[in-house]
Length: 394
Image (cartoon, rainbow, N blue to C red; front, side):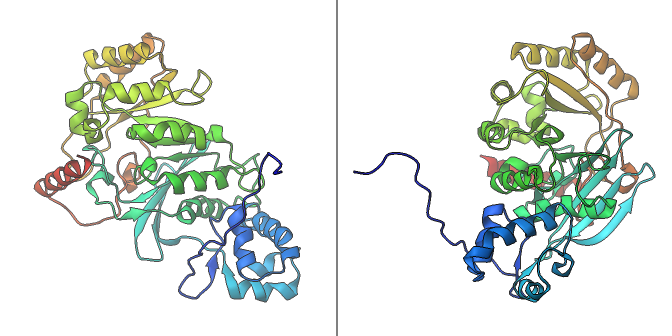
């Protein structure tokens, strides 16, 4: 008679995609996949568990990319590893530093696709803004990245690689929780993270793993424009802080500037926020609100924002973001006086509403400015692209 209870699954070798040189890139593999890569490369079964543990430590705790530097692995084994594996980093096409200390990297993938990441240093923290896609499938009208077509999702390795490269550049190996400059990660770079859910989830699990990079989930924020069906899964399977690109409080305005609203409306989005697993006063949901002159910045809209947050009983704070202009943008930045008035109304209702200081504007690294394509496009071309994306949304 069968004994009831848990049955261990039989591991099935996965199809690792080798590079052009035939080697397998270990960057971005989970612990299970790392062991599987060693097994499929015919390493003796008795060695697999130990070698996988050693490799994980050297890759994610020490930041090492050369097998010859792994001192607790025998020298005789180094050539065997070098023939079969590689530990990569993204190719850096250009690195820029703003006058305010913000850093931006233009990166290139093996298939020639460009994407960007940004590091923002502050007195008490350092935040890495990570991309999840090459281009973007959405067309938020205030966002320069939104004018790009979506090329493809970034892989798990390409997402993790951004964090590794930042650690390299900041000289933060070995990985340790105290005294490091890179303290926070925001999935707010190019792309919509929830449209690349599996790769984002698996990459962040590596970033949060206590045996390696060890970044706390409390220090990671995932931003979405409102992909409602995926929000609960994000809370359950990733469990990081949630930020929502709200930017408007009426259907008419949000339909225009965040076209995804035509598919998932404000009420549906806010209910998903209310249902987000783990949200509480200690882990508030952040609403991002870009301030657009005469579009979404009136006193009436500030009062409506307060009403909506209280209606859904949301543990929330609001980040007010002065619009960062770019060539061909259809909007202007709200005046400082208007931003302060809007902020005061929200604050007086008991909701935190700080005004974000623009960072990296001089190198196009500020919020909404990331865009790797250098060609200039006319307003008509941008409008045509917007209509194509709206049609694709249904």
